[in-house]
Length: 255
Ligand SMILES: NC(=O)c1ccc[n+]([C@@H]2O[C@H](COP(=O)([O-])OP(=O)(O)OC[C@H]3O[C@@H](n4cnc5c(N)ncnc54)[C@H](O)[C@@H]3O)[C@@H](O)[C@H]2O)c1
Image (cartoon, rainbow, N blue to C red; front, side):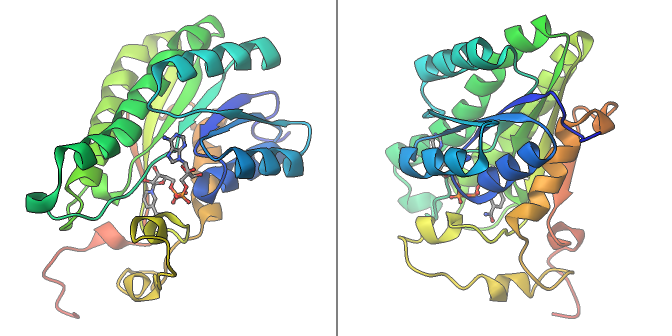
């Protein structure tokens, strides 16, 4: 039987990148997927392409009312919510000294508050359904630091922490909560943060053990596992898929 047969999943930021790859794989594994994003054109086109088990709804993850509407509509349309992937996120490069409060709060609003609102809004329906799986996309930037990512890294460390708190609170009602920590993945995220032009990610890829950046499909496989009952004893844990980026430290003698 397919790993996600009969499951209903909400995936945020699923109009493109890793979220879209996850939506595709979830449907292949038998799930019904609510694709939620602010990019209505790409989101609706993906839902059309993926067929009757894919549905698109507009969601700005930082908006409390929109979360309430989305979860209500999902339950009305599909009967329940088994899986939530809090994947939507934005990146911003800026030195600490130059980062305005407005810029900082924008990243926190989407990445961190969005994840909090998402988790909170599915507690009731998942509890009513007898359990579920919440998967929060953090990053290797939630495990270690690099310069210029003060807002992004803060949000991703916070996601790692709130996932564990939620796991501790919700385990008794059968809701598992885990964080996923991708390394550098070949999506538009870096080029969007850099202003929209082409960005060659391959030099960064050559620095990691596997000598390449990751593909969205490789993260989707981790998400399928965490959404499925195959991960039934995993909660409060961190799942790293980074090609070995965090296996080393600054004093790598090979350069
Ligand atoms: N690409 C990487 O190297 C990398 C590495 C580690 C973690 N991540 C994380 O993975 C997740 C997915 O990123 P990606 O690489 O697919 O990026 P992406 O830019 O390709 O996709 C992000 C998606 O989120 C959507 N989005 C942005 N703001 C939103 C909002 N307010 N509400 C709803 N949707 C919104 C965008 O429209 C887009 O469809 C993010 O949380 C990101 O921080 C990415």
